[in-house]
Length: 270
Image (cartoon, rainbow, N blue to C red):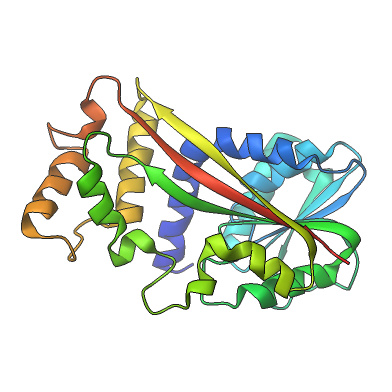
């Protein structure tokens, strides 16, 4: 596995500390049909594949698909430890050309993938729709915003306006490729009844050491370690507030509170 993939794996596992609660709420809101077959496309380590399997019930089955074998191995290990081995399976494959026949799943789900790469999101949705039965549902879930520096809205706004801050979107991309345009993607892909809902994950003190570590990693993931697009003064302020070894870390303030949002989009296969 490449160094980039290894880093991403570690970040996936660390981010679960922040995301698990809100994504569990989102998965419950899907109301997945019992005795169904589902696909988790771009499943990563399989953490949320297992969550989907639990939500769908004991007579359901969820297939996790990812292009990175090391992630799939982690998923298999997690499923074995959780006792869900018979209700999940993990397959290596590319979301652009799924290794499945048509109309075999009752639903498909994907988190932080469709709209998170240079791949055409409409083509990805069409490929997912190819494998889902008529009347089935496709769900995509994307991180959509955050407010993590209470008391420093100007600095946070400047950070969010940098290339790293707007990623995976970038200034050269067409506006219609922004992830919050996903309702239009569903229509273009031939899906019906497209809808959207945003969910909020809250972060409140007191913070455990694991939560602190996850937040510091999130700062770096969203805004970089040394963001070259900031002025020197803003760069120093960013380091002062967001480095865990800084005595002025924002995570040390009494009553620290932040939040992030995930936006869910879904539509039905005709």
